[in-house]
Image 1 (cartoon, rainbow, N blue to C red):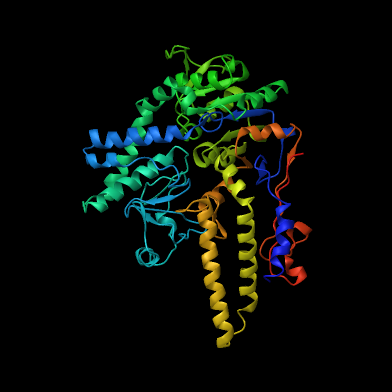
Image 2 (spheres, rainbow, N blue to C red; image 1 turned 135 degrees about the horizontal axis):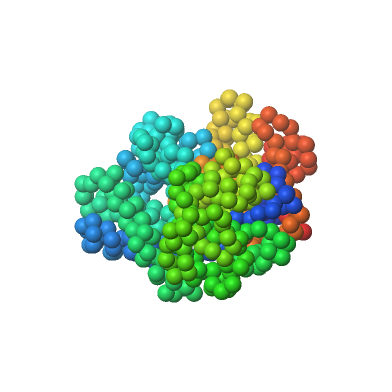
Length: 490
């Protein structure tokens, strides 16, 4: 096996994935799409790491100044590489962790404060590593109605998770007795205040070049859709002044000419479910008007409202609508489950993870890991002591390599998409609620608007691979699953 695996690596290296690919969970043709909808934050506008530092610092100071938390918390700075999106937080136990698609905790990724919790302690607390359905987060990832887990799905939640971890760390280091539920609620409120009070919005508007990344080719994407006669709309939770300032910077002062409908402060996900809130027109100066809305007019700005009224006024229903957003629950779940819209998830982390997977280190490690797993599967039937000694050595080596592959992505929590071999809870939700997903909207520039996205027919566990790219090297008496490529744009 050690002789054969190195010969496979050059073949695999020729099948590297293009980071600018659009990936399909469900077959979808752009030819069928007449209307394109967008979220604003982390969909049309991308932010620099300075924004997360700003949110962390302001929320930390709110805890100190308004909630009487210790001044010593000012010793903590934002750590941009500590957490990843999609983690769960046990509110009662003050533990941050990664959970897979089958509700199993990935041991080694459970943190109390800034320190990992030993595996034996985790198993003792949860009577194993499985998290029962009744204590998992609710449909929108929230901790409510008896659910003790909160899932952080928003990119804006990265500073919140980091702040939770830092405050927990401070209390433990100083032997301060505290109530974890109160801590969670206080941090949540402080982070919310950064948005609700407009502190973040004012800071970004005052120094827009520092906080907004002008490089995602948003303008080119919108122009392409407009020139091809596509309708476009914007539904965002952000206020108009903030969106207008950002879009002026990204697209230009005529940005509103590209959109047929613009809705701000929509209060998603409530916007998709609550039929009671009517639309309200907003002037360019932010004045709220009181007239009843009979039509959603191009060039006007609307606040709040609800999707049912939106559908009635526009007639934009079903699979001819494609909506893009970064939050799998708040942006996409209701649209695909209840209304039949097509959905596109913007996952900025994809680009970094694909670049890592394209490295020689990763390819070599994963190739040997898969080969070793195949050997274990085949050779476990040998029960004599000598064979079992060798097999145990392989098991130990495999475990070391699994930890290495985790650390390549993030030293604490690993990949956003995998818990070792299983998909993460985040990944399973992504595959359920997003027809397509991509690192940024700029990926659309690589495809014409007649393109059909086809998901790969990856074999189920009981199915035999058919196509060469799906065929395991077992066909050559080598127990190694070949590297699978994703169709790229031409």
